[in-house]
Amino acid sequence: MSHDDAAAKAAIRRAVRALRKRHLLEEGAHSPAIKALSRPFAVQGLEWKEKAENLELELQQCYKAQSRLSEQLVVEVAECRSSKALIQEKEALITNLQNELSQTSEENSQLKQSLDEKTKALDLSISENCSLKAQLDKVLLKLKEAETESKNLIDRWMLEKMKDAEKLNEANAIYEEMVQQIKVSGIEQLARQQVDGVVRQREVGYEEYVESSIPSTCKHTITRAHEGGCGSIIFEPMSHKLITGGQDKTVKIWDTHTGSLNCTLRGCIGSILDLAITQDNRSVIAASSSKDLIVWELGSGRILHTLTGHRDKVCAVDASRVSSRNIVSASYDHTIKVWDLHKGYCINTLVSASNCNSLIYSVDGVTLCSGHVDGNLRLWDSRSGKLVSEVAAHSQAVTSVCISRSGNIVLTSGRDNTHNLFDLRTLELRGTFMASGNRVASNWSRSCVSSDEKYVAAGSADGSVYIWSILKGDVVGVLSGSHSTHVLSCAWGGLGTSLASADKNGNVCIWT
Image (cartoon, rainbow, N blue to C red; front, top):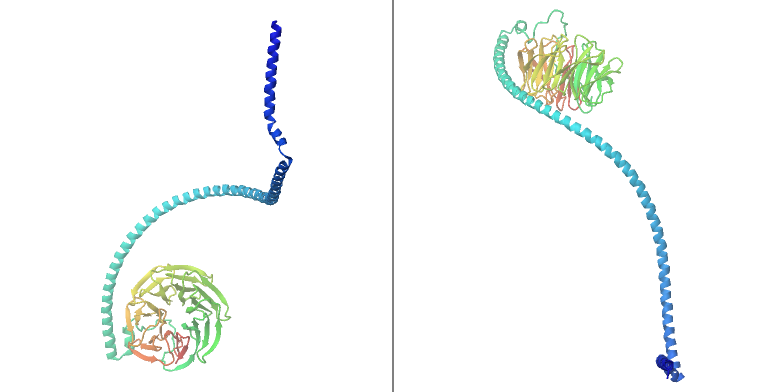
């Protein structure tokens, strides 16, 4: 056997083995199918039916799941649309907010710039404040030193005042002794010549006035002349006309013969606290609680001036007895002002340490007499504004200052319920008038001296009017029964026949 035959046989054997192996593998792979085919068709039908039912059941479940998923899909699509709309709104809002943010940023930049400027200004103000504070400390130190010096001066002044009071008491004792001697002698005319300053002989050129009589009867009672009270009354010089001012902000002019109202002056916006009439009898001036003075023309009743400048209520006013041009006023702002009625403004201002309750011109038209809350009577030069002299007139506030027709004596009333008579040249006390029932009713109670300088009249809180004799120094009359409340003001007519009084209820009485 050849080599080729052996190789062929070997190859055939390998091929046979491979075919057998492949046959075995194919037989193993097709064995389930062969087994299935070998089973009966009935069994296979049942299995297929069961599988079909299972598949149909799974298919139904799939349909249900698909339905649920579709519903969820619809809901989620709606939510998606809503979310999309909300997103668009939010985007628009974001756009607006971005615009506002831009504007706010610009405003913030401007505010920051303004803040920087104000910070610089504040730093400057703080620096100035520190400088002012240092100056204030220096001023306070000086003020403290001044207060200490003032206290020392006050102590010295009080000591001097006590010494003056002792001298005054001695003078009063001498005066009372002289009066007693005069009473014993009974020579009245000689007494007028010897007691200078009490009732001096009239000087050359002095206008004679009708001798005053002691009133005893109420001729007229003007009920409710002013609503709320009447605190100021004056007679028109050498006339029977009475001018009154009250809390109802009006000034009224009355005929004392008949008790009838002649006219009413209006235009004041505050209570009338004092009245004055000019030297030519053409204008009347009212001091008001509204911090001003009103000037009326008597003939027409029209307002000529409204004088402003005081910073508190004006409680006193008077007109010059020499010229119809000048008047003077006092206020609770510690000032006394001199006014020019032709120009209508203030020409001089006097400053006092104590508020003035009453003031009056002397007959020279230059000197002013003022009564103050501290109880002092002060004399001023109205042209220079300087204090000429002063005296402790009362232990409490001075309520009234009245100068006699001759200008020789000045009467003061005080809350200490006394009425003192001073010689205007020397400020020596010439007489003191008081009574057990006489009580001064207010800080602006006005007393008066008769035109012939024989009598003093003053109202009282008990509703009476007390009259004293200047010569004798005692009470010569008490007018009562017509006023039911505090009598605030008294005025003696220049003709000497009438005395007027006004009370807190606004009633006015004319006595003869």
